[in-house]
Length: 402
Image 1: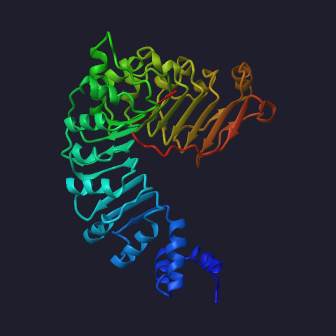
Image 2 (image 1 turned 135 degrees about the vertical axis):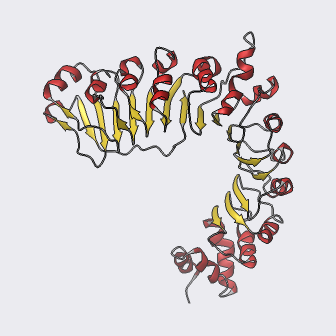
């Protein structure tokens, strides 16, 4: 007969369904699964009831096994009876959940979750609710409000005053009015903020109207703007006043899926002085424009320049970007549609010889690699790499602050 150590090794190779079936073989194996295997393996549990069918008895067996040890739960399309069973437990160590039902959640469902998960820190409610239900989650620091129908701007104000949020993700408002000063003060303490283009109006309302006692986003480190970006009043105000809204210097900007006109309008160092101090620029699925990129010396502090799935303008000269980038340490092209690059010996000598640091030219593509003549002779000036840096964030714009 196999001992428990052997069964543990076997269970490590089995599918989740097989482990559940094993628990029905005998009481000793059931104890092994319930008190040792599941608590240690399921500190993070993800399941979608649209794919997996778990009976009520098995579901209870799992909850009995893990409710004191699990830390993250993700359950999608939870059936009604399973949700009722879940609601009879308390999970003291769960800090992050994502739960949807087979029907839209209502205010009572979301209120119930506050008792089931008393120490929740990350929450993304999904359904129809007001601020009253969300305010019950007293320990929540990271809140996503993208699937909360009927939530009002007044609800948002109550939530800001009730919770001490470190990160907030919104995508619910098609029209906004300014927060009052007390609400805005709590809003300004957020570290990571995600808004759609219209919701950007929440940022500049109170802050700029009181010039004698402005409220500054002193803690903001990341601002993410989602949805289709177009030239707009909200973006004009953000770019025009960002130095007064956020006290930190900009570190990097990542921009995706925008038009040529958008790039020409907003990536203009003569109009927006803060761009000169950006260290990292990342472009995803955009045109590589001469008037935006080919004079990187305008970006005085630019050190790294990345292009992902970009295509070149007709008159683009990649060598001009390199020759005008004396401070640039990395220039990277990944899966880009651009002309073949040939770097002659004279170009290396005349344009890279004056550099203090080696230039890293990263090329990660199915297209032919750049031709660098006399590469070994000038290895101290230019280095070719083939490393994927591809971003996993395809939101429209991400701004990071130092």
